[in-house]
Amino acid sequence: MAFHYLEPADLLPKGAPVPRGLTNFPKACAHLLLSRSEGRPTRALDLGCAVGRSSFEMAKKIREVIGIDFSRTFIRTAKQLQKTGKIRFPLLEEGHEKKLSLARIPPPIDRNRVRFRTGDALRIPARLGTFDLLLAANLIDRLPEPLRFLKQALPRLVRPGGTLLLTSPYTWSTAFTPKTRWLNDSFATIQKALRPHFRLLHRQDLPFLLREHRRKFQYTFADATLWQKT
Ligand SMILES: C[S@@+](CC[C@H](N)C(=O)[O-])C[C@H]1O[C@@H](n2cnc3c(N)ncnc32)[C@H](O)[C@@H]1O
Image 1 (tube, rainbow, N blue to C red):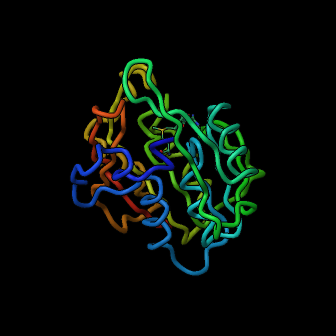
Image 2 (spheres, rainbow, N blue to C red):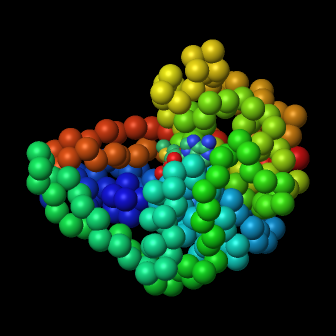
Image 3 (cartoon, protein in one colour):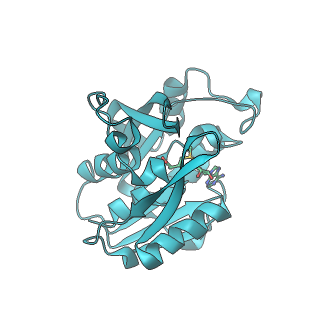
């Protein structure tokens, strides 16, 4: 919740300098994807949406946004946020100490434009159709079959001319992906897998900050790549 609904300056100790270029990551992903879309996109899919910040951000411009995640808990929370517009959540300070913090969807966002549902990124029902925009933020290194996701799932979900944003720090782990399916030289492998259906539009580092407790953080750089379906 803190990662999605608080800003780095709210997470770091008061007065600590925020590294240049570091912003709220799910919001930055949505804005990067919206900024590079062509035509008038009306449908967006946020795969691995977690508690939904990128989905809500995309709803600023997009009439129909679908957020899908494996986790029932995340989807339940995202739906609750959609209903009420805000939720209080505990933020770990240290040891047993927690403080209550507030997640809030900015009021100008039409929350009714978003639909959340549980699902598996590798098994999206065909009846959901195709999308003008697809976001898969920090998802690929959580999948059991990343190459199948790239070669089969993504080409089916993005309409010709549509835009795809993939981000990942490529933190391969046997907790999610069998070692034999880790991508070697991840970017090169992604490019090769997508080449028959997508062309690369843009690539950049996208930093993010994960808070463990009030004095401990993980600072990571995702590889963000934007693609257009040919
Ligand atoms: C590292 S988090 C990234 C969440 C969010 N996109 C972001 O950038 O903050 C990965 C998310 O993918 C979800 N996930 C993992 N495997 C999935 C799958 N097969 N299908 C859909 N979601 C999945 C997890 O539940 C988790 O919410």
